[in-house]
Image (cartoon, rainbow, N blue to C red):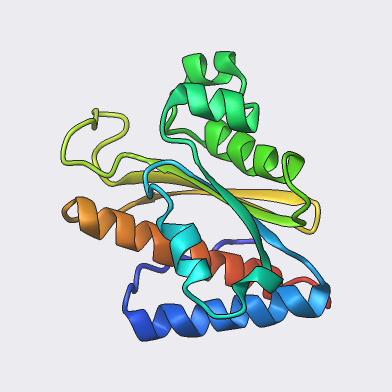
Length: 173
């Protein structure tokens, strides 16, 4: 499946997306777990802003440091050392770790460079790796967002939730 790209961050659009995710997860009797690094819990906050989210939001982790990724989500230290925290391998391990350490059936993970510092030639500021585990399959995607730290984080939240919506709705209820 080709994953869409979406960066619209307005509140009414995100509210609509979250309502759609809530409906789809509840129809399948699924719950969501999140594992966040560069967003620092903003995805979990967006989810729990929706009344009734306890019916479909199971838990979330803010695993900002490499040690937290390893201790909380079982991201292998050698994967972090080999690929770096901002990588496909780490995003996938975070999403899979979130499922393994929860009773959720769906997870999403984000790890990136929100800026204004911390970027490199290979991973400039605005680089974000995403992973979603839905219906027994892990999907991943890299995005490059422009703007200040706030802009990168807001675009990351919006993109993570829009793709989650697409993936959950693509599964049979």
